Length: 312
Length: 301
Image (cartoon, rainbow over all chains, first blue to last red; front, side):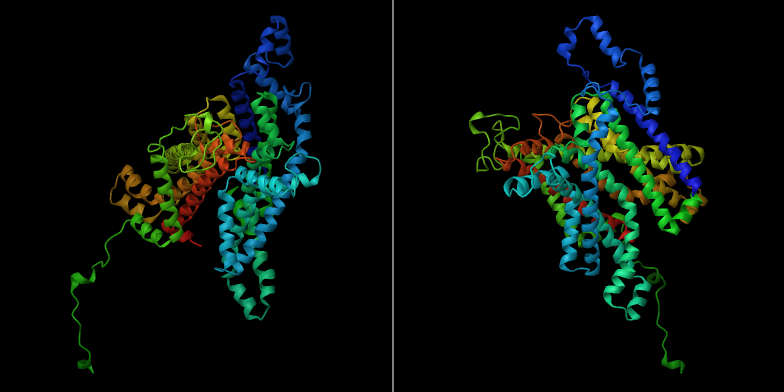
């Protein structure tokens, strides 16, 4: 197990290094510059020199790269171009709160709804609610999240006026974006649980439990559900990826001061250092989630642990 | 006792007779797919959408970039089936032009995934040893990278357009395919029929083309079917957040973005492209599920 985790950690570092390097050189190829072209050209050569010096853009590429890597190791992601004088880590740090809140709420909604739908669908196989669940599952992954978010905003917020249209003033503002983000999670969980449950329900121990005379409710809760829920851990990785993607669009639609909207804004403003900071942040977050999911799964299910041990 | 039983004459040639004509895997798959009503309906819907995308712009009196400021934001009517947008452009034509672009991107991206992914996976599995180890370590690093981030970064440094999106999508999209193909070929190449072919003196390239590849086609087709909707989504998504296709080109993402801007007053601008993209995605995912059941009955649940 420890060997396995160590191996994974080495990959984690390697992957991050590849991402940072690729991003760094891609960034230098960006058309345009982070400075306002008109005003920048009005400056004297000396002024330009000073500004470039200040952001470390005067040196040769390899030198900039080495310096940047060194700084990252010290946790310094440079200074933002848009938010003058602010450290990138500070800018990102200030945006994590809203994104995290929406993301966590979306995962919770998705898990809760998906579990309930999936379990009922499998229990009442081929019934109306089963078909309903399958339709939800297909629509949830097929309707692009930005379309869902836009329609929710239009009907719930604009037409019916139940919840705020956007902004970030109190908790109510986080409800619609969380719901919009949760669709894909709900669909994935419901579909997965349904398939798992259908398989578990055919197992011999379910028949035994029924034959023992246990009430259907007990068979369902004690035997079927417990054994179907564990594998859901495996799809947490893809779910989180979908949330990251979704947050880029959803945060823009609901004007939420989160990381997703910061990312899109800094792309449009050519804010090199912020783009890099967020890329690294997203990647690291994603890799960590996948790692934790894998470890958690092998801890829960001993069969997986053996397989992993063999591989390592 | 013996006379009670009469020996029935069995014709030797009848014994080995195969009653049913020999079917290829695809014909069998098609027979199974035909029974899946939802999948067949999706297939026909997709064909209809494809035909509309191809023909509607050709047979319309309007062009996708022709502006007319006298008729901006008209609601759907007989002249403009889907209404008009902020420049008085006909949305019926624009929507189908957008569909055309989305489908084109999807198919080209899927095709590139196919070639790169299949070749990478096959080479890795067939050569094996150190080459396989290195190729797999490389893939393990790639798998850890969130795709969309890389696609976005690539989109930023390349000029906006169809081919940029295709390149960006295929750079990141082939990894899954490579893994699946490798796993499948590793499994196949140690099976008895390959050994039998080898014993009979079949050349390696013939084994690859006649035995290994045909047996992997199911996995490849199924995976490609899921690549297509994800490519369509990614294009629309990039265009929606403003770094994909640019005006006056009309991809579904651009149209949805335009519609979103005026959703409050002119919902029809958003609704039609949104319906088309949802239909495409739903049909591809149902058809993909159907194909998986039809081509790989073991996975059916």
